Length: 205
Image 1: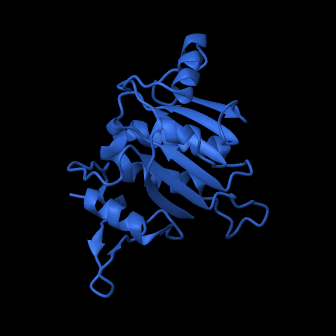
Image 2: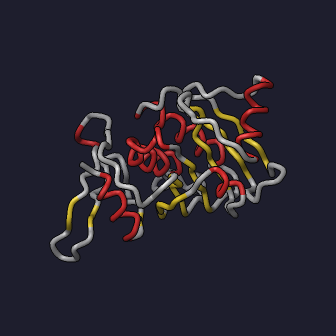
């Protein structure tokens, strides 16, 4: 599975061509306008969705959007565990669909936990098939992490313990590009394009 990072606002996400669009919603969410904001407001008013951690709502072929599937996922207070739970729930909600390209739209309050979101997406999309012939692999092959400004450096990037599961970004002496050893829980390492690796590396402190 490939992971990419790009600049993506809610307005841009509304016109984005993707198989599934996951929008993380925090209780600290700043008021915005546009189609996505209107749909979120209607869902909250109807009581079908709240921004509490673990809440998830799925639309199929949402009107006015170019995506086939829209998922609102609540992140509560926006802590690392909240972001992980939200991304995991949202990816699992569309995991068995025919989604190949998935986009996750994050807000400013989620940026300190960008790497947590990346790992959660990869973990949730993974299907173990080595000794399970009947298991069907997920069709998800590309996940794009959309942030308000991908060029803006982030000085604080938090990572949950234990340290044995932490990705350690470092400069490779052979290529000069940052490399990322796989977490011990993954049989295979997710593929990240060089631009994404460089972006994640500059976020790491």
